[in-house]
Image (cartoon, rainbow, N blue to C red; front, side, top):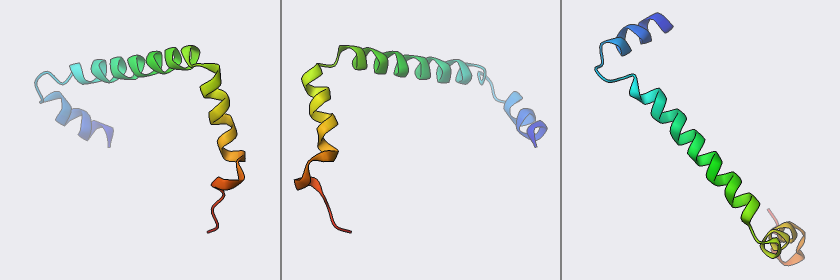
Length: 61
């Protein structure tokens, strides 16, 4: 199966840039996510922690 995909991908000009862009997007996303986690205000984090425990947010299915 892979040889069919590889054969088609080799005929596309400039296809080698897509894995590099994918890795770059992946890396930038997680760097920004870690930055947000470490710089988030403690009050905001504690408020978000309590949301599942508040009784007024219970829903009956």
